[in-house]
Length: 235
Image (cartoon, rainbow, N blue to C red; front, side, top):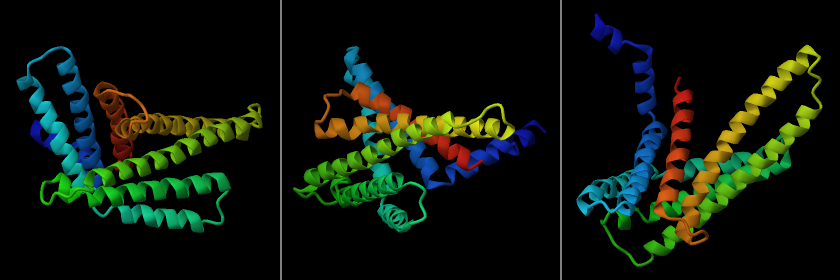
């Protein structure tokens, strides 16, 4: 009976739906990848022997390659989303619309260039331009994240403007106020994720002098936010 209760528990069903999605598996792998990057740095800085560091370095590299394979072909999704955002003439705010187009094109370009480097990264076929393509991929990702960050800051400003017009003495005003609070919380969470993610291409491109500890920790935080978002979507 105890085994049946465990097997048929709603959480188990939720977990199966979660891991059945490519996004869910990717976010879990990403969390382990960036935590390993952080922990390998921590072990190195605390003068631990290489034999203790090696497993985490291996997890970091192997999971990064696995995730690169999972991303193959995903660029089409973002090109389509960019086209849909551009064609959305009924959008309430033109600034957010153009930010959406910039974000999706940035991500699509990143994924296209990242896909082009897969054979080199996997050791199937090495070519000289792989490093340059990967650098350009990071630059495109950086641009996409900047657009999303700008959209988040603009959304927070818009929510503040809306909040000032709300009459909390009125019943509808109370409902609107709670709606604004939910939107603000979601926007703040996405902003934290974007700022954390910005450390990754910033470090790779040399825009910021960040060690693997900071990048690994920031990547772990943004990954956990992604896990939480994917978990909620499969509820």
